[in-house]
Length: 393
Image 1 (cartoon, one colour):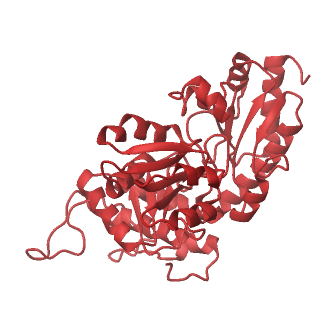
Image 2: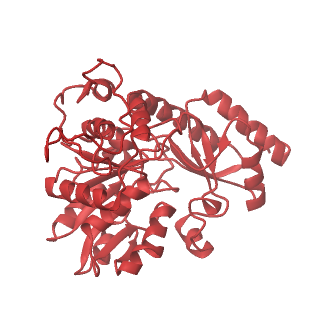
């Protein structure tokens, strides 16, 4: 838990658990770009022996993330996928069963389908927006329910509190939440009952497309130490330079999130009213079927949205390519507005029939709304509509 829990988020990310470098009193914690550390005497260190196990700069970022998660400790990893992989190797064994959200990041799907199944780790998908569907998916060997809410890319929500209550009614089932789209500042999944919070720190924590990283946080000290041990063994700790950059990004996280949310709401509202748009997925819209759940478990609606045009797949892709201000790139949560087509990017390995059933059509466009002025973003959409369709219809 933070040593100053009364701080507001904007103060918390700057000052809570703040570490200084004592030799020079540098206001920025330095980059400890080192592989190893001098022993003060045989077997005696200052807490660091080898950077595969721990590093002061990485530890400083871990303290900052722990502060926003509301935990004693957090652990940082080379990437979000490194965090999920370490989680699975630390907590699961051959024969164990995992329940996954049916709409989930494509990299998570690939991890289970192409890697973990070779270690006899079993998994099934469930519609985690329906708690009864999760109940029906539980087996005697179920050990983990891994949900992503809001889900990538349709923003479908899962009731974290209800699923956690269900899981904990069994003896050995843990709940982990991929909270990348919102971060703990907009959705504290641990406070809602989940056991483990996972973030791709590449996204909103960094916020500037400068690093690759991931984190795990839990209130359970036994789980924390197991994760720490496995991370050291398989070498998935975050690099010091990436940690240092993320340390700078997290200081502006609350301010950035407020702008992301405001701009996304404006863009989503405009898109929904456009005659060329047939569907907008954004939890802040009255048309979003789970808006009430979003209002209950989230502090805001986030900066992510998806939409479909009244157009063919070819026209939809041409529309994306016609955009000049919105950048076509894989990732999200940065100051730049990023746009992508999940069917050809993050979810390209999922068969068309399954994608269509999950709402991830070839025409679906995902938008990470950045910090540019909404008026300028809307003008960019307008010129792209004109370029592809000739007029606004």
